[in-house]
Length: 161
Image (cartoon, rainbow, N blue to C red; front, side, top):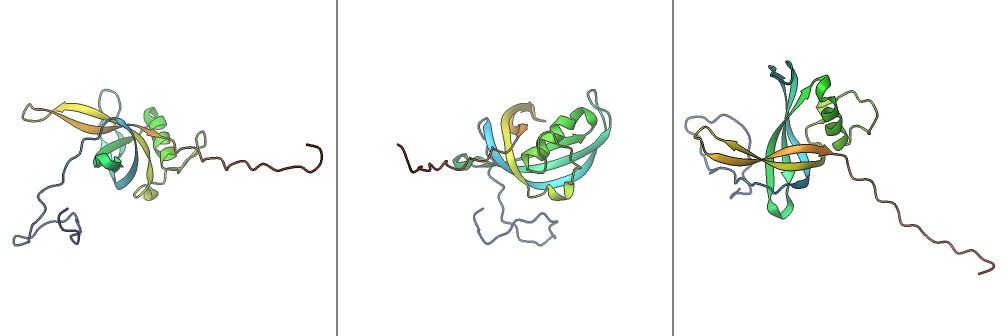
C-alpha cells in the first residue's frame, strides 16, 4: 500500500468518505509448499451437491507467504462432514492443534491467526466474460516440520584410548 500509515479495515463508506486504495496488487504464486496464516474464519452452510450432502462449512481466508515472490490471499472451504474428516484432520494438524492419529474436538475460536504449511497449486478457470484466468488454490495442508534434533555432544571417557 502506498501510505504506510493507512490501516485497511473492511467497512462501509459514507457518501463523502475519502478513498485512496487503487486495488491490491495480485500475485500468482508458483506451485509449491508455503507457510500460511489464517486471516479470517466464517461459519457457513454448504447446500449440497453431487459429491457431498448439505453440511456446515468453514470458509477460511488464508494469506500465503511466497517470500520474494510475494504473498497471495486464498479463500478455502472446509466441509464439516464425515467424508471430509481426513481433510479436517490435516488442517488442524497443520496449524498445530492436533497430533497425527489423536482425536480432536475442533476449536474454531482458535483458527484465526493460526499458522501452518500448505501445498499450493494453480487452478485455471473461465470468468464470466469467457476469459481464461488462473488463481492459486490450496491443494493440501501439510504437517508441521519435525523438530530438529539437538546436536549430539561427544563425551570423552577417561582411561584406555
